[in-house]
Amino acid sequence: MEKVKMKLWKKILLTLMIIIVILILTFISYKMYLRISDKIDIDRRYSEFEKIQTIETKGALTYIEDEELSKVENMDYIMQDGIGVKVDSVKLNDDTCSIEFNFKLDEEFKYETFGYSYAIYDEEKNIYHISGRMHLGENEKYDYGFVFMKRELGLDKIDNLTGTFFADSSGMVTETINKDEKIITNKLEIGAEDKFPLSKKIYIKIFDIGYYTMGKDENGKPTASSTSLTNAKWLFELDIPEEVNKRDTINLKLAEEIPGLEMTKIAITDTKLVLNFNSEEYRNLITAGKDMVADEFTNKTKEMLSITDGEGNVYKELSGGTRGEKGYKMTIDANKNDLEKKLFIKYSSNGNQYKVELIKDE
Image 1 (cartoon, one colour):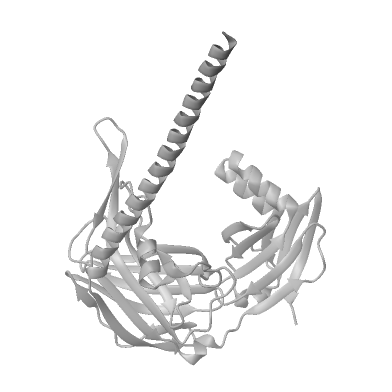
Image 2 (image 1 turned 135 degrees about the vertical axis):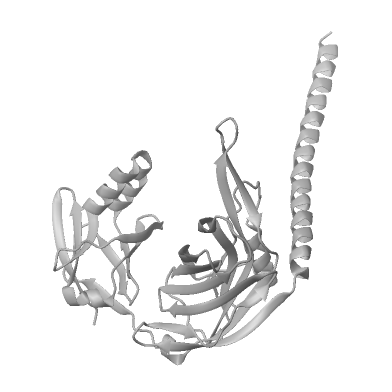
């Protein structure tokens, strides 16, 4: 009787093992199927993207010393599908790449939600930034603009891209809208993680121009949709003037040390002040910020750390983000001209208040 029971248990265990193996193989097969499906989908989409001819335009930049930027010489709109694009100016230093575009459109829509995909890189394939347009209302699995440009530039074949991508922040803003002429002036600003290279040429690729709309359905639920205006692609190749590569970044340091705050980099240019520092207390505040309302969080971070000058002005934080375990990077709306007013860092730690001047690191 016991032998019969043992044989029965062996059969049950064997059956269970077979079921488990089948489930594992099914799961692996499903994962492989998803990967293959994704690859097929990306290959198909890229094949369509690749077929579209890119209109290439060469130009030269003229450095305007008083404005500390470079204007594009004698460039008119490059027209495709009734849409014109031209580059007006480029501002480039160690920490900022700012490009102003003009777009001439052939239809009216809510211009405030206008956008485009882009890739900015130089002659050595140093990537300033790549970004796809926001496709609200579409269930897109990938940022296809980013995926396609990596592939087009051959970066998908490189295992380690460290040192190839230089940006850690970006933003675009529509500065002016001329509805009569259907012209949009748009500025793209990219911030460097460390600093941008000394490039001889800059390549600016624009594609996937479109816009999005938001509203509510008959039940009051939010809705969103994306509209593509054209599949056309533009590529601008611009020679960079020698003056742009004569970088004038000023490195600063604290006039005296502040307990609990280790500054690893303080640099100021004609566009912004960049602070890299280690502070466990500040990082703890950033972590706790997820449970605070926006105004409370902003006020508490300002109370702990801010930049002021000798006239009592408090400078705005433009962007910020964690680095490593204790590190943080912050960009401030101050520039070299503000050094004349003397800049100070105010820091609060464990009930102690510090105010220390930022001085040149000779």
